Length: 277
Image (cartoon, rainbow, N blue to C red):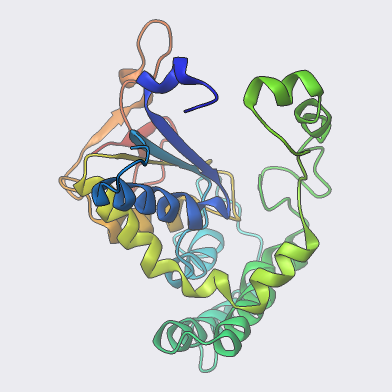
């Protein structure tokens, strides 16, 4: 806001992708809380919205959605990669005794680093990565076989150009991933212990008039549409359960400016229809 005062009137909009689904809502909720405190000599941040693309937000339901998306009720492309033996194995890994669901419950009941790191490790290895090990298909676009031709990496060089960094006010180079950061997060079981906080943060934002948009590609296994719908149901926005289906184009103006927030229909098909609350 200080660096780009000409944009202040537009408000602040926070967006997150993938694991950003954990922290975009929490950061936004914290901003709103600080605004309410009214501390002298501080800046009020005019937060207007958050949006989360293909977000992994709540492991309590989204690990189970891996089974739902790949086995039952399945994905919009009718890709059924597992035989009966593998389907049963994935079910047991997720819902059986000592499986992922039990470990998620244990973590959220007793959120210590050890318990939650164990839940993370088990669920990632035996549930999330089950697709990668057994299908030969790209997890971010199940229509493609692995190795997929994307994501392209040329955006990294673009973001590290001096003129681009000056334009966006960046003081450091962009790094696509940090092994050290990943290890630090994994050691606390961060992935498995923050779901309730994320959901509550989104509820708080909606109650304060902040727009929350979740958008998900229907060919993405990794943070799939079924899991996103489960999270949206947990948040329980007003009129969400009774909202009907609308075509996405109904929310676009002639210049293709999005006029509403939307999500994929609960029926999964057709892929051009969305549910809007």
